[in-house]
Amino acid sequence: MRTAIYPGSFDPVTLGHMDIIKRSANLFDEIIVGVLNNSAKNALFSVNERVSMIKELTKDMPNVRVDSFDGLLVDYCKKQNANIIIRGLRAVTDFEYEIQIAQTNKVEYPDIETVFLTTDLRYSYLSSTIVREFASYGGDITRFVPESVIPLVEAKYKA
Ligand code: PNS
Image (tube, rainbow, N blue to C red; front, side):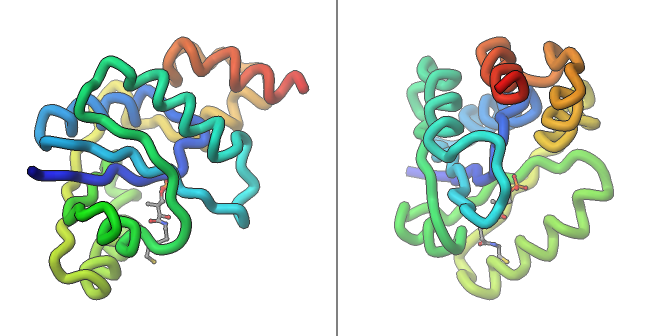
C-alpha cells in the first residue's frame, strides 16, 4: 500500500492543486491531502474551513483523504506511515525552495521521497497568493479556483 501525502497551505485550494490531487490519486494507492495548521501565518481561511472545502471537492475520489497537521511534515508522514511527499512544480522559481525543503526532509527522514509533478500548463501561473490578491480587489477568480470555492473567497472579502 503506497500512501502519499500532498501537503500545503491551500489558502484557498486552487484548480492547480485539484489537478495535482487528481493526478496523484491515479499514481498512488492512497493520497492524504495534509493542510498545514500554521497559526503564525495570517490565513484567509481557518484550517477547518480549508479541510472541509477540500473534503467536499474530493468526496468522489475514494482514495483521497483530507486531514490537517501541525509541526514538521516529516513527523506527520511518519505518523501516517507514509514515505512519499507530493509537490507540484510550476516554474523554475519554485525549484530552489522546493529542493531545499525536500533535501531537509530527507536529512530528517532518510526514507522519505519527494515526488514532483509538473503543473499543468493551464495553471502554471496560479497560486493561492495570486487568488487572494486578485479577489481582494474584486477580480473574477472563476478560472483560478473550483466553482464551489468562488463564493467562499468572495464572502471573505465582502465581510
Ligand atoms: O502550500 P505551501 O505553503 O507552499 O506548503 C508548504 C508546506 C506546508 C509544504 C511546508 O511549509 C511544510 O512542510 N511546513 C511544515 C513545517 C516543515 O516541515 N517544514 C519543512 C522543513 S524546513
